[in-house]
Structure formats: structure tokens, C-alpha cells
Amino acid sequence: MNILILTGKFGMGHWSASMSLRQQLLGEFPQWTVDVVDFPAYAMPNLSDAMYKSFNLVVTYGTHLFNTYYKLTSLGRPDARPPFEGLFLDKLVELIHHSRPDAVIATHPLCAQLVSRLKGEWGLDLPLLTCVTDVTSHPEWINQNTDCYLVPSRQVLEDLAAKGVDPACVCVTGIPVREEFRTLARKRTSGVREVLIMGGGLGLLPRDSRFYQELSALPNTHITIITGRNEKLFKRLYGRWENIQVVGYTDHVWDYMSRADLIVTKPGGITLFETIFAQVPILTWPPALQQERNNARWLVREGIGWVAGEDCVKDIALLLEHDYALQAARTRMGQMKGQLEAESLNQMMEAIVASQEVAV
Image (tube, rainbow, N blue to C red; front, side):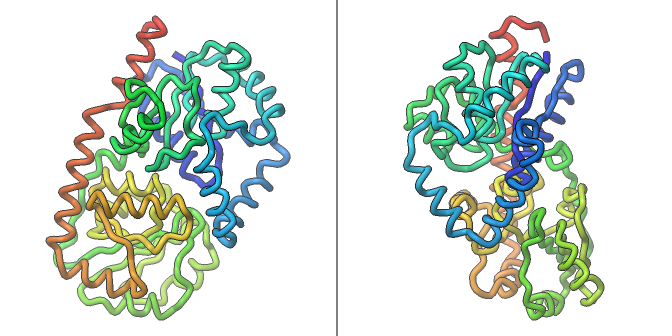
């Protein structure tokens, strides 16, 4: 079985979900071939870096522009035509001809739209699985030639059904995360409360030194801050406060999560499900991007976390003092984790294989 996972690095969440899917599939079916392709980079190798940098600038400094675009497209219809469709379709035909997959999994809406278009208008006979990495059912994810949707929650399943998607084609798998988060063993530290603070891959964290000074002053508390690829922030914070450990970019976030009583971070979709499988409650920064606002509302509604107010340090202190709230969130996360594991990706893939009469 040859699986092609198509994605894009508009933010690292889609790429992370793709690599987690690959790890999960190969762990269950080691005889399969599973390739992950950054499709915009494949289609436009000379322009993709500039495109991704522009995207990062918009989400960092032009959130109002991004939110306006997101709201307008949320009012649109499914089966949207993506930009540069002609160029992308030609490159997609080239890629599929070269890799000859038995099925395609798309973890970015652009990729799902293109494969669906190829199936509908060019007669491509190839199963398309769309892995939704948002906790909402934005129309850009919905395409009529999709054979199966992998969605984060039952709410997304119900929303897709309300928009005309056959519920039998939807599998609740959660957003894919690495196996290390799924099998995480908690490492308790005696007598000291642990708080993990992350700013995503770009290291988007508060600039005010007073914030970190107040964090360091929290009694009986150790703080770990992961600054991601923000080297400037790393150099400014490293070694300045006794109770704060500063870490740069790391591929072992799960190790730091295993020690944490509370995580403070942006409410990205991947991060939410990493914390669910790690069963570590989450306090999010007040979100700016519309997708993150939707995620924040969802995590509060599900009882697995909170949104910080104007005084984030005060909110951290209150949560640490009220362990019953943290324990309730951990319990709810455990319930969600069990539900997601009951509807596994592996069962869904076996059904796809059987439908194609390909031996596993």
C-alpha cells in the first residue's frame, strides 16, 4: 500500500499532523510506503519560501487581514477553487504519476481541493481522505469528491453532516499527534509545581520583562519557557531568573509536557490535541486569529482549559492554588482521549484498503 500525504507549511501545524499520521500508519503497517509532500514547495519551489514568510508576517502582524479573509471564506460554499489552480493541477498530475499512490491524505484545504478537482473533472480514480486540523467545519475543508474525513471531534462530525456530508464518511480521530504524546508517562516532581509556557514555532511570547519577573516570583513553582525559533527572545530571557528555565527550539516537547501541571500557550489545533493526549490542562493567551478564537471557545466548552485575562500571571497562580480545577480538566482530557482511541485511524484505513480490494 502506497500512501501519499499532501500538506503545506502555512504554519507548522499541517506539517506536524502529516508527520504524525505517517508515524502512526507505519507503526501499524510497516510494510506500507507513506510519503509526506509539502505540495506548494513541490509545485512552486522558487516561490514557496517567500509565500510562507509572507503568511507568517500576516498572522503575526496583520491578524485583522487574516481574520477578515477567514470570516469571508467561512460564508462561502464547499468545493472552492483554489488560487493558481491550473499550475497546481498540472503539478499534482505530475506528482501522482511519479508516486502512483493507492490513496491520498490531505492535511491542508488547498491539497484537498486540488485532489477533489482532479477526481471530479479529470476522472482520477483515487481515494481522497481529508484530515481536518481545525475544530470547526470551515467550508474550505468540504469537497464533494472526498471519500473520508478525519475530524477532531463529534461536534465537527455533526457540523459536516449539517452541511450535507454523509456521516458514514466521517471518522472521529482527533487531530493526529506523535506517538510520544499518546503514550506519555507523567513525571511528577515532588513538592514543586511545574508550568510550561510555549509560544509556538515562532516563539510569540510577551515582551514585557515584568511578566517574567512575576512568573519567577510565584512560590513553590518552576517555570519552563520554550521560545521556539525566536532566538532573539531566547537570548533576552536565558539565565535571567532563578526559577525560569529557558529552552529554544526542541523536537521533544512531550518530555517537557510530561512534567507540567499546567501549559500556557496559543490554542493551535495541534497543541490542543497534544495536551489532550498528554492530559495536561491548558491556559491560552487571549487569541488573536479567528481559528484560534474558535479553538479557545471549544476548549473552554469541553472543560479542558481556560483563556487568560489581562493578568495572566494571576490566572496561573489561581489555577495552581485550586488543584481540583486542574484535576477536573485532566479527567475530562482522559475521557476524550479514550473516546478518540476507540475510533482509531487504523480501523478506518483498513476499511479503505478493503474497499479498494488491496491486501494489507
